[in-house]
Image (cartoon, rainbow, N blue to C red; front, side, top):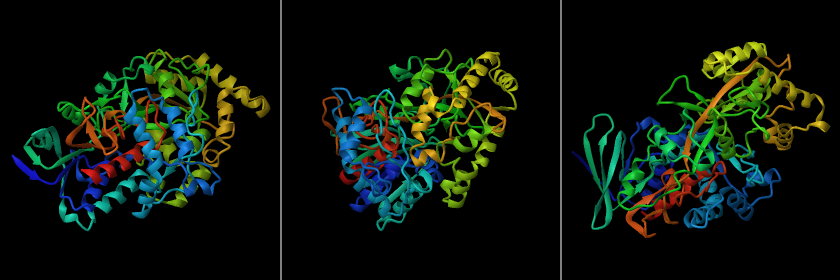
Length: 532
């Protein structure tokens, strides 16, 4: 058996674990950083993300005349979260994040070399429940890939790098205690099964959530979403299986709100899968029609992205089959179609401003080609009858009705043709509202008809629910100490990032304001590193 010793063990080399290790080195602590994955994937899910972080009251907002601040941000957060009366620690973490994020995340990141795109985006605006009242989603220039690269580099170039031991391919199976204090962990090497043990004064869990285990996702399915669909794609980290939740629970830790999950409604299959049920999360085009399994427009309130992700999942799960279709054309796809994450945003990821500008002006032709030619959930045709035939071939049972698809497209196009004064359609009203903000106007068509012969060919996308993030997890106090059933800290045990439901065991509440996930990893990791 291989044995390690350190002052503090950090389990997980994602963004939360990396920044925790940085803070620990700043204090002169000897750190053992363990991770199941290979070294090339250091940074974990953050490295794969688009890299948006939530802030309220930044200089970037002020530059565009956005009046915002902590009080307004917290009011929106509370409205969207729908905290319950017993959610003391999630509420406390939400308040701490809003009050501290600008100084401890925004300023800190800029201080180590992270840059942001100049214009914040406006997402999760709210639908039935108020969401972000102003644009707050600040995008890292270079996506989450750049965020991971910069923080990793900051760690590896630390003046006290000699105090850091990095070990990859190490799967932690259990925690070790001595006289009631967590003093280490045990596990095996991922490839060989060889056992190891590590001893320290404290342990920080930063190993992600449960959403990489689809069976566990279904077991903890939120009541709003009825029964989980048969097919759920995996957009989370392949090792986000809740193993460390169980290890901590075995010592009496509180694990809360595992049904608070951040899943998306528009997942498609990755054609080069790196894990079981590997999916890509599309950013659904606002100008596309969202149809059910038969080809009928979902309603009465049509589905439009950017307002309430939780509600989108709710509406899809209410359908007879747990998948949906989006109907669009090439013109819409070129301007609006996007995939969340760094992999399919190479111009942003590689910081090629000219390429970004080209895609904005001419449409993202590379992405259009990549998806329509390779993704098995995309079908393309020159006419509706031919398109519906391909849709039915894809599902294999003839369930898509040509009459239903035709009626949906014709009626929508008629409303567009009536002119803006007569846009008696909620989707068109929401498009008009979205386009008032420059960031959305640049990537949203101006009332584009579906059956426009100059905008073809026609495209249909079969979309599934895709699992992404856990918003519940290990309950922690504001010092990132893991709390037991009596509300008392478990000595020597800390948690940060997704493992802690991004803080407190669920600081986002029932819904999440986009960007509070990465931000929660950064804040929680820094706090854990300061006290462990």
